Amino acid sequence: TLVSVNSPTSELQALDAAHHMHPFTTAQDLARKGARVITRAEGCWLTDSEGERILDGMAGLWCVNVGYGRRELADVAQRQMLELPYYNTFFQTTHVPVIQLAAKIAELAPGDLNTVFFASSGSEANDTNLRLVRTYWQEKGEPQRDVIISRWNGYHGSSVGSGSLGGMKGMHAQGGMPIPGIHHIDQPHWYNEGGDMTPEEFGLERARQLEAAIEEIGPHRVAAFIAEPIQGAGGVIIPPSTYWPEVQRIVDKYGILLIADEVICGFGRTGAWFGSETVGIRPDIMTIAKGLSSGYQPIGGSILSDEVAGVIAKTEFNHGYTYSGHPVASAVALENLRILQEEKIVERVRDDTGPYLKTKFEALAEHPLVGEARIVGMMGSLALTPDKASRAPFEAEAGTAGYITRERCFANNLIMRHVYDRMIISPPLVISKEEIDILISRAWTALDEAH
Ligand code: PLP
Image 1 (cartoon, rainbow, N blue to C red):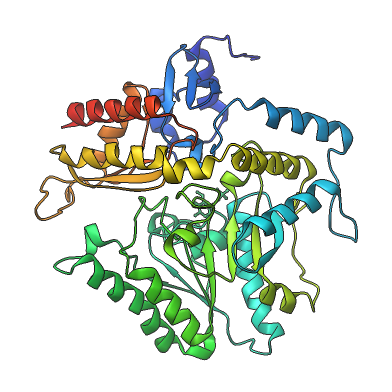
Image 2 (image 1 turned 180 degrees about the vertical axis):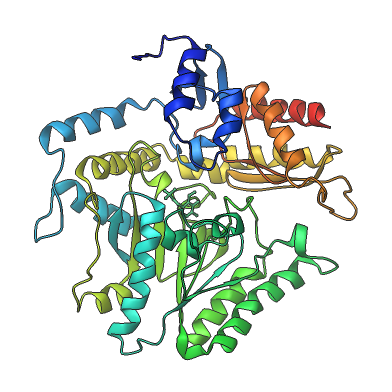
C-alpha cells in the first residue's frame, strides 16, 4: 500500500478515501469524487498530482501569510530540531525560542498586551481563554462572573470549549455543544439581516444586543465578551462602522473582559498587525494562531494584558498543553515574524497590494450574481443573490450558488471558499498585482459559468 507523490492520482484518492477521515467533510461524497491531491506549493501557487497549478486564494486556511516555499522557515526548523527538538515549559524550565517569541509578540501587540500563553492551535487557545477569564474573576473575588457572551455564526474553533464559544449551529447540533455558561447574541451581518435599517443603525442595534444580554443575565454574572474583529469563517462579515465603538463602550461600562479572536485577523490580514487596530478596539486578551507561523508549524496562543496577567500570576493556572511553546514551532514563528517585519509585508497590504486588490475585488459587484463585494486588507467576500435590490438569499437552496461557484473556481484552478452563498478570498499576503489580476479574472470566469 505504499504510495508516493508519483503514484497515480486515482490510487492516492482511493487510499485517502479508505483510511483518512477529513474535517468538515461528508466522507461518502468525497469518496465519490476523490479529493484533489496537493503535492507541492511555491509562493501563492499549489501544484496537484496531475501537475495542474492552482492559485491559492485562501492561503491554505487563511494562514500561509508569507506564501509557500520559504526556505528560511525550513532552515530554522531544521536547525532547531537538531539543537533542541522538544522541551516543555511546565515545571520551572524554559528555552530560548519561546523566550524570544513571547518577547517579540509582546513588542508587536498593541497596548499593554505583554504576556503570552502558548498553545498549538486557535481552538486550544480559546479553550485556554474560557478557563482564563473565569479564573481571573475567581481571583478577583467575583466567582459568580462565569458567563461568556459570544455571537451566533462566530467561529472560535472546533474543540468542545471553543466550538461552544463559537456560534455555528451546525456544529452545536452534533456532540453535545454548547457547554453551559455561554450566551450567544446576533452577529452584525447587515447584508442578510439588516432589513430596512442603514448599516450604521444596524451596527448600533446589534452592539446594543450585548448591553441587553448583560442586563438580562445580570452585570455581576458576565465575565467576558469574545468576538472576531471581522468574522472570517462565518463568511467574512465586515461589521458596520458603528458596531465596534459601541461594543467597546459597553464592555468598558460594565467592566467586562474583551477577548478579540485574532486567529485570522492577526499578523497583517486586515492591513494592520492586528484586526483590533483596524476596528479600533482595546482587547484585554487576544487569541492568535494561523498567521503567527504562516501555518508552517502548528502554534497559537493567548496574549494577556498586564492587568489580566497580573491577576492570574497570583495563582497556579492548572492548564497547559504538552506542546505549549514548542521550541520548533516557536523558532519558526519568530522567523515568520522577522520576514513579515523586514519585508514590510503588512505595510504593503495596507498601502499597495491591498488597495489594488480592493479596487478589483469591489468591481466584482457589477456581476449579475453578486450583490455585495467587500474587503478589508486581504480578507474579502462576495454575497451571491438572485435579487440585488432586496439582498435576498437563495432561500430554497441555501449554499448551492456558493457551492457551484466554488466548484467553478476549482475547475479554473483558483481556490476560493464558500460559506453558504458567500464567496471568500483570503490570499497569501505576498500576492503580487499580476497574481491579483489572475485571481480576479478567474473569479469573473467562475461567476459567469455559475450564472
Ligand atoms: N478562531 C478563529 C477566528 C478561527 O478562524 C479559527 C480557525 O479557523 C479558530 C479560532 C480555530 O483555530 P484552529 O483551527 O487552529 O484550532
